[in-house]
Length: 306
Image 1 (cartoon, rainbow, N blue to C red):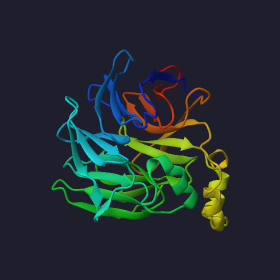
Image 2 (cartoon, rainbow, N blue to C red):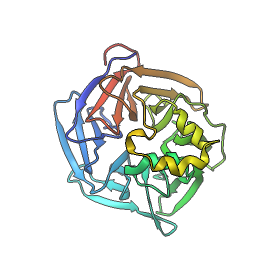
Image 3 (cartoon, rainbow, N blue to C red):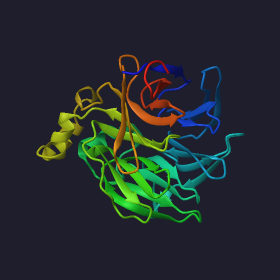
C-alpha cells in the first residue's frame, strides 16, 4: 500500500489528470465544466476555462493547446492562456457524439479518441454497463480533420493511449475488463485480459509505460447480467439507484510495457479517497483523478510517501 497525498480542487469529480511539460502543474476538469490548473505542491489553483459541458480526458495537442474530451460537447481544443475554445469534433457520421471520454495524440497530430456509448450520457454511465450495449467506439481524427471509426462495438470504450514509439494504440474496454491493442494501421494484437477490475483512463507515462486506472474491482452482478442474466437487465435498470451495482472502494493502478507485460501494480488505502478514473506517471510520481472525489491525489512508484 502506497501513501496518498491529496490536493483539493474547487469542484466535484476531477476525472483525469495531465501534467505540464515542466511538471510544475497538474490540469484536471470537474463536473461543473471547469478546467483547473493546480500547482504540484497545491499552493496555487487557477481556472483555465469553462467548457459548458463535462470535461473528462485531457491531452496536449501538437500545437500546444489542451485537448479536452468533453462528454457533452465533444472533442475540444483549449488555449491555456485566455481559455478560448475550438470545437474539433462534435458529430460522427451525422450523429452527435454521445459520450466523448479519452484520447491520445500522435506526433503527426492524429487524435485517437473514445466514444463510450451511443445510448447513455456520462451522468447515466451505470445504465450502459447494466444494459451491456457494446456500442462504444474508438475514433480517429486525422490532421486534415477527417474522422473515421477504427474500432466499433466496444464494451464501454474508455481510456486511449499510444505506446512510446507510436506504433500501437490501446483502448480500454471497461465493460469486459480488458485493453484492446491495435497497430497504427488497425491490426488487432493480443488484448490484455482479465484485469483485476474495470479499466478507466489509460495514459503513456514519462517512463514509457502505459498506465491504467482501475476504477473498481469486478462486480458479480454485472458479470451475471452480461451472461446468463441478460433477460433481467431491463428490470435491474428500473431498480432504485441505491440497490443497483455500484463501484467498490479501491485505489489501484497498473502499468504495462508495449508487449502487454505487467510492470507495476500499485495500490493505496481507499478509506478517504477512491475510484481512480485518471492516471498519469511523471518522473516517478503517479497522479490520480477521480470521478467522485473533490481532490486529485499523488503517490510514488517506489512506495512510501509521495
